[in-house]
Length: 130
Image 1 (cartoon, helix red, strand yellow):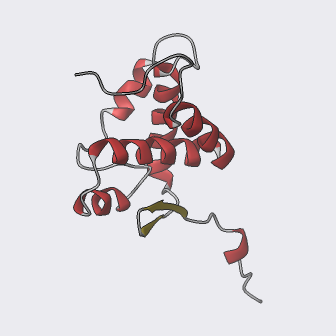
Image 2 (tube, one colour):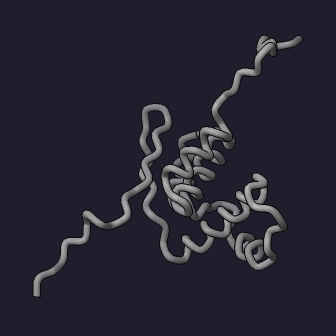
């Protein structure tokens, strides 16, 4: 029997470029995938995209995630921390990764654009006050 080369159909890494580095985030394990889906639901509830309260079962599942880990980033989470990226940047990368793995690239891209693209407010003075 001939082995099937499945590489072309396997889920690719998520590549995150920050400055002069590119971080390769491996696809999540089955165990991490359920945590990522729970985090995606929580994100959609917090953003008001889904009405209602977060189900207690999902909240309980999220509480099992260790404080020094992130299921959507795997070991890339620690590399980002060691490389000195600001907490806000790591949070945004994690948020993006959650929705990338849970809903796909197009969804993650559109949500990131809505959340983090700087907006000019017509008539507002952007100069610092002081």
